[in-house]
Length: 352
Image 1: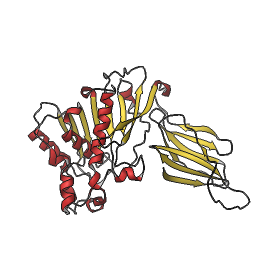
Image 2: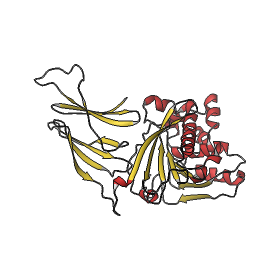
Image 3: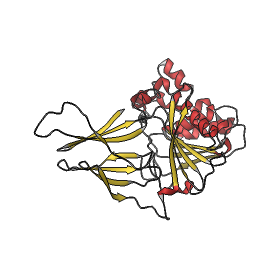
Image 4: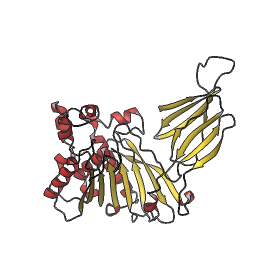
């Protein structure tokens, strides 16, 4: 269990935690008449409407008995609820408008677990539209991953994702090591000299989805951006046969070269995440997975790589170098596209 946040009220205490990859909120009654709080017993869990979800605290009044939080899931648009800590009832105050006759009950969400190469159980969040998928291996599937910086890729709602779901795609998130979904140790086991766990976890998730007939290799597209783009580049080199297509957005793919140059923005602060390649053991370990350094003479799937000309986090030269290496060495005739946004930074044309 990971403690994420607390909210203190006159008569109550709300604790936000994460357990088995999902957030939970527990409300405790505080002692009256100035009595000390010696321990926490008898807390009430806040109930949520979906099996997979994301929840975060909103601003609430200290003297109130109302706990306000935001809520979202793979099929529930961003919502704001008021939870009465005296009665245990929730009231929906606001929900994101979704056009096109959207009905959340038409979509199925579920959590599955893949077994990693070392036996670790890796959670996968899945969403699809009930009446459009066959779940016999013939459905197209997009598998998303990140797995760095202890970031939690929660199963949030996305209006743009509906376009895929409404055309019969399945969408899945691989909650791989290097992220923070399963606690601090989950992160520690996916960084520095254990970084390869991130990539093998993702491969195990893809294999699970194929073995359990969510898709086939010919219907599987993978997607990641930034550090998630490193993930995509690494698994493309390791198991190119496993995927039909890949999207690497502003990917951090020249790991060793970038981490050797302290004049590049963020490099020195990133040594705690990837390691310092000026140390021999770190150099060779990082080189063993750095996508640019591991492009091989082999077949690759269809690939789209993007970059931002003004990106200070991942210099455009990194994805450009990766694409050049692929063009030089790959042996297939599959599509390889490189798109560099001339007015963009790391996120968009207006953001860095």
